[in-house]
Length: 167
Image 1 (cartoon, rainbow, N blue to C red):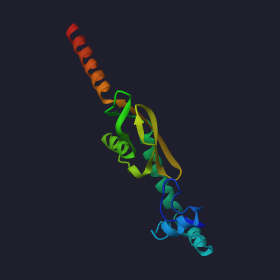
Image 2 (cartoon, one colour; image 1 turned 90 degrees about the vertical axis):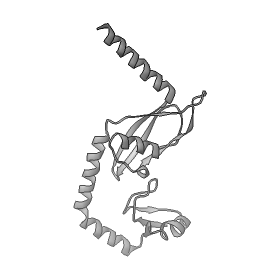
Image 3 (cartoon, helix red, strand yellow; image 1 turned 120 degrees about the vertical axis):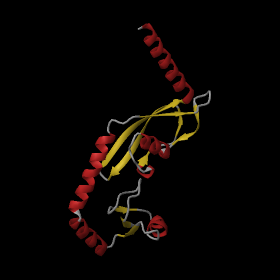
Image 4 (cartoon, rainbow, N blue to C red; image 1 turned 180 degrees about the vertical axis):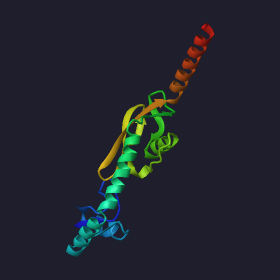
């Protein structure tokens, strides 16, 4: 079944995309919830006319997304979590955790436009922020042990105090 999406659906497509989905998914979920319409000949003509009229607006939206992407380009997140002795985290680091960490750094990003797998171990991972149909930003996410990070901060403080005492 061919449908035209009325809104962005991560993992499926973006607004105004014409895509093929299984009949049941389109008929029972997407169309009744107003997320899509059937891609008939008349609907495709209306879509083409609307896109032609909105071309300058879409260019402005893309430019705004690129501006936001450039500000997120050099951002790297370090998330401290409680970890068991085997290196497995208590709970998981997910998209909402990443969105909260970005908010702490001054970047308002909706968790729904972030894709990544749930992180359950200490290590380095990557989160992808989908700002626009054609604009994505990959953000490195480093998950560290809460206790190990606290010890590192303490040792840095002790070293700086001893340097100040020596002077």
